[in-house]
Image 1 (cartoon, helix red, strand yellow):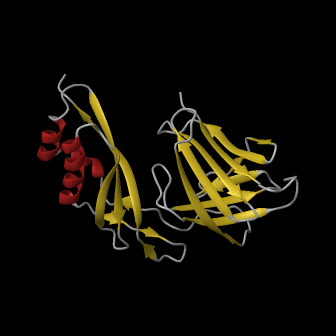
Image 2 (cartoon, helix red, strand yellow; image 1 turned 30 degrees about the vertical axis):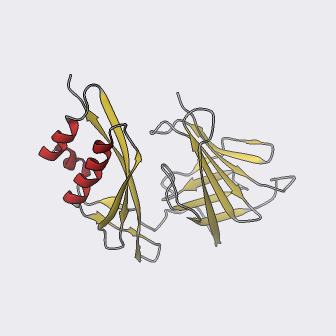
Length: 223
């Protein structure tokens, strides 16, 4: 069982018992890796001990305070990853780490801009999303050919797509590969041929921007 931990650390400060509120727009300063994306939005109210993430669909209370860290959430995510999100208040920077197991294997650094905080409100931007069910691609004849490369059992691949501001796929790469290289190559080739349209990500102003979309596919071998 994996555990998800999202923590906020106030570094270089002896106490977090002072009034602070943050509405953070964060952009990755390096190539981001699954499961963290290139952008992150956080709203944090130290006074109320509440926070929300991205679209702010659910406002949650802090899970606890441990020394100089505020544990925002402690639970299991749907991908089975351990996550840790640390906010450096003086530098207005976020470090996101993830792992499966005890050791944190990857890290993404974000530079944040603190917007004016009023009250918790739904995030007005739009995340990138397919216009139709992208899973249909993997029920095609070409997809069945790929499944035949799996001799037995199941093989799950994770892929990342570059999506333009116009909602078109510009590139594909495998971020959770299998040992069968042709299966990795064939998955991206299949997606690029199908070229499913996407609703582009949008800023709060409504302006579309290029971003990435991540998902996974499982191939089932012969029974």
